[in-house]
Amino acid sequence: MQVGDTGREIDTVLLTTDVTPDVVNEAVMRGCQLVISHHPLLFHGLKQICGQTPQARVVETAIKNNIAIYSAHTSLDSVIGGINTRLADLLGVVNYRILAPSGNLGTGLGVIGELQHPMAYSDFLTHVRDTLQCTYVRYTRAPRETVRTVALCGGSGAEFIKEAVSQGADVYLTADCKYHEFQEADGRIGVVDIDHWYSERHAREIFRDILAPLGIKCLISETDQTPVNVLS
Image: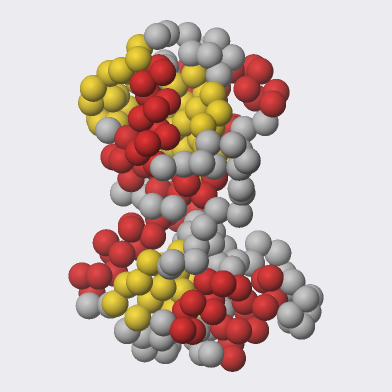
C-alpha cells in the first residue's frame, strides 16, 4: 500500500502497470477509489510533496481525490500464477517450473518450460513480437536452430541468463539486457530482449481475474503505456 486508507470501502478499481500523473488523473475522471499497479510508485522516499516531480504530483492528486494506490511488484513476480507464468501461457510454454527458486516452496523468479509446438528460432522471434505486440525485439544468436526449451523472466531479468543456460534452455526471454550481457550470451543461448513494459503489462489482467469475482468493478487503464518510444 503506497497511498491511502486501507479501511476505506471501494467498488471501482483502475488497473495499470505504472502509476503516472496521467493514470491517476484517469482514475479521478473514471470514478475509481483505488489504483492497483504492478510497478511501485515510490521506490524511494519523498522529501517534498510540492508537485515538482511526477511521483509527487501523483501523491498530491491521489490524496486530494481520496484515491488509494496499491502496488504488487515482486509479490506478483515470484509466484505460480503471476507475471512469469502468465507470460509463459501467452507464448505457449507448458510444463513449466520456477527458474530461480527462492527459499520458500513454490516461489521464485522466472520460469522454464517447453514450447507446446517447437519452432525455428526465427519463427519464435516473430511469435514473441506478434503475441506480445511489443515495439521491438532484440536478440542474440541461438546455439540451435529449433526452439524447444524456453526460459523467461518478465522485467529486468538478465541476471538469470546463466541459470537459463545451465538448465538447458534454448532461448531466454527478458527485458533491459545490456550490451555485455548480449555479448556473453551470443551463441550460448538465444537471448530475446523486449521492452520492459510489454513483458509485464499482463499484470493488469491478472489483477482483474483476482478481483472481478469479488464483485469489484475493474477498469484497465487507457493511459498506461511504455515510456520507451522506438524510431523505426
